Length: 93
Length: 139
Image (cartoon, rainbow over all chains, first blue to last red; front, top):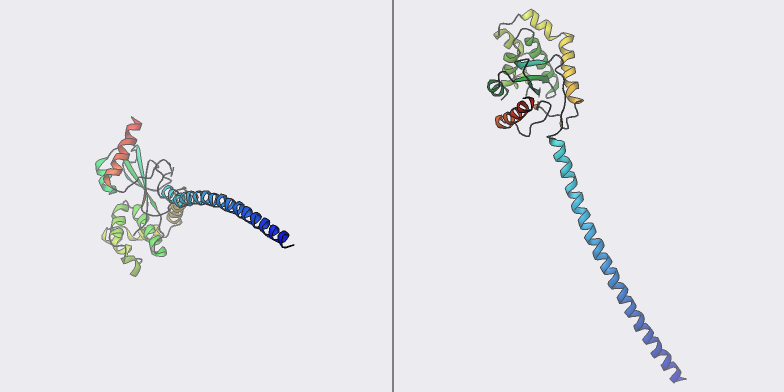
């Protein structure tokens, strides 16, 4: 009876240690996955942080955009037949 | 600045003035009306610079441009009539509308366009370089 009990206990101990080894393995894998996710998150965060700055630059002045503003009866300084037109939007300030 | 450019390129460059009176709203709008009324008598520039130099005076007396007009020797009856004319108000509204609908991202003044393009700086060198490049394209 006691022999049987002992063998059961030792057997289950062996099983427990086996399953612990399995858990450790799983933990390692999970940690590795978390590291990967962390790296990807950092990369995404960097991209997000730089994206609005790019948009703001575009908003400030787009050197390639051409805005056609007809003269439409406005006051003109200088030679009215000049080839180059500077348009000035102004306010008294 | 604009005068420097016009002095440097007397034949090749013209400057089109678009009013966008948004600061201290009512006074600025009236000032634009007064400037365009002076334009009817060929004195836009004189009126414009006189107001520009001392624009803060508009806050205490929005009709101070009347004194400037007198100083410039304008026909005051015509000046006052032109000032309140629908034509001048429509012109200012049209110019404001042109700016709002232009697609220009930042509606801040003063805003310059050279052949429709926004200069990347507001100094004589930047403007001259852009003008020279545009002139070279036309040749």
